[in-house]
Amino acid sequence: MGKKNKILASIISLALIGTLIAGCGSNTTSSPSNNTSKNEPVTITYSTGKDSTPATQKLVEAFEKKYPNIKVKVQELPNSTDDQHNSYVTALSAGDSSIDVLAMDIIWTPEFAAANWLLPLDDKFTKEMRDKFLPGPVEAVTYNGHVWAVPRFTDAGVLYYRKDIINTPPKTWDELIQMAKENVGKGGTKYGIVFQGNQYEGLVCDALELIGSNGGNVLDGNKVVIDTPQAIGGLQYLVDLVKIAPPGVTTYQEEDARNVFQQGEAIFMRNWPYAWSLLNSDDSPVKGKVGIAPIPRGKDGKVGTPVLGGWNLGINKYSKHPEEAWKFIEFVTSEEGQKITALEGGNLPTIKSLYQDKEVLAKNPYWADFYDVFITAKPRPVSPFYPQMSDSMQINFHKALTGEISPEQAVKNVAKDLDEIIKNNGK
Ligand code: GLC
Image (cartoon, rainbow, N blue to C red; front, side, top):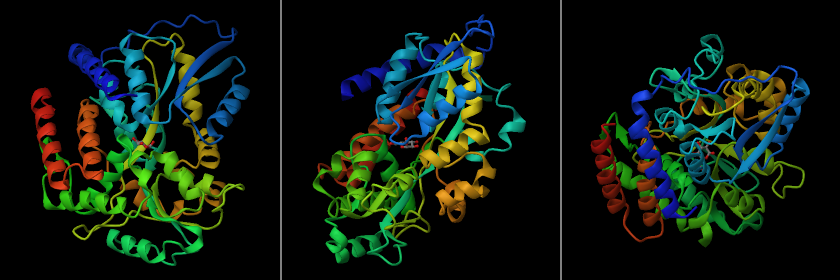
């Protein structure tokens, strides 16, 4: 989506937040009633981003088998979270009732809840159910005292490396750069690293990981704290990584990075856990050659800090089939559903017990060791105005990445924009 459309979508979203925020949390009675007789087949629409794994299809098949009276139409949205966000903003701000279940990025809950676009799920996703889930993702679906979605899977940035070339994965970004320079060319590689360098949300995740791993931060409560030597140093790593990456990296999203790494062309890759099962699929040129490690730390940081990602399922407030929509969400986020997602999609479960499941661990052996890393992943700023904050970070981090401005200038610009967003909106 073009920048203009994005800005327009943000403006519409903001205007709505402004007018609807007063009604936040009070929409329990405003959903359209569901008069469908239990015996009539109902078709619900599940809107979700393009899935490069078989997980979505398997989930729908398993659900329809269990509930023969409910059919699920999958409405596939583009890959990038920003494009998905903007298409929801356009549809929901127009009161579109054609979507029943929405797959939502973890960063959207405050915005969508404040805009009054979702049905609150407090009575459905009960405390007893929530207690079985990881606390971080549950916190992320809670806003203004209500629960707005159910966590479908969680995400945390990880480092993939070619274990046929590198024996011990790097603990610091400096070591990584050094190893990349020393080993490039081995095992058919052409590049040191691939990551998400396009101007979009994925870049914000990568940059915040580098900033956090170098001891920097964006917000401390409501205070903007990004203009520090640690954050500048973190962003400098991003600039340094471009030098050991393919020239096209400044346009890469997750799947572009995975494709290059999967073709055997890069030694390292920053990506999310979903890539593991695809990299090890039978037709993958790097099958069996890939190791996985926690995000390294920078020279001014104590520990590598993966960014917290993840996807949640919510019900469109305008849905004509909220009960059937809930049945689908309940199934997909149940232990049975999340096991399908873990086995077929390689996504991290949000139900704690699945980290001890033998089949799940056989398919994703590193999950047991990484559990502690996953649960300490760091959230991005939590705010209904996050899309605006992200816009500023996307623009300025990308300019730093392409050398248009220095990392110092980039953090100064972001600090100024974020200060203004907070000042104008009170949060
Ligand atoms: C992954 C994460 C999501 C993040 C996105 C960025 O899908 O789960 O939280 O915003 O990547 O591209």
